[in-house]
Length: 346
Image (cartoon, rainbow, N blue to C red; front, side, top):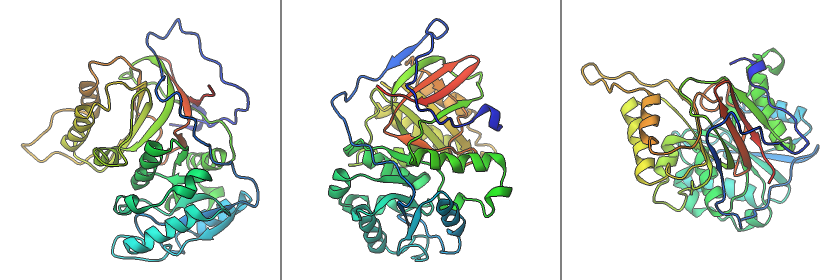
């Protein structure tokens, strides 16, 4: 997908609703109407972004491109104690990762928390994190992949917006010489942090299901969301726009995970469904072919529903992984010749 088909807009006015004549299905979120969570303050020059590693490890050298770019945006950077720490695959022990994340959540001077990388580990500490101060004075939590644990937990309990986006390990060494798509995705983080209302357009897919949906945007990594079922971090999907992405799985595993969401009734009452990148799918073992594509898997799980579905949306483990504001109101428009997701003000 090239830039002209997918650009983030710096919208400052209210968003109008497109004419309905060409769109057969309209789903509007009426769930949790009473919940009015506090949106974290948007960042201004001089504000501090903290970098921590609640999951996998990353070195101080590896975060330097991200540090330089965020400093060029006018922000100050505070590097957490887990950056450079390592306990096998983790960015320090569970206790160290918990303490570092907790310190940043409690620090009034830190206005946003950028996770160093994904991997695995946030689920091991999430139940011990104290969100008391965060709830009263929220700040932006930024990341994707394993950081979906934090997005799910924050949405479930507080509904406070957070940013699903690339992390430190995805910032280019030389921003000026990076591919345009990489520049755009990195800049979408800046736009999200500074309060720009984001608008994204994606190339239509023949497998899409048309319609208009309005509601909270939630989601992230499929395997993480599936693993949160039955826990204190399980998300409520009723009346919401759910986005999913995944990487490095077998098709039968994707079917099993989507089946878990279906059996848990997480797909019954969505306002809309966005399927992002499902990349590096593992080949079937010879003689054990699954025989179904990701399109087949999704269509089967939602065959008794009517909400709009957009496939191949630019989010996930890929270059075109744009920043999305979880828990913020959005409008999804899916037409035969148009796919658009934009922030929406009630």
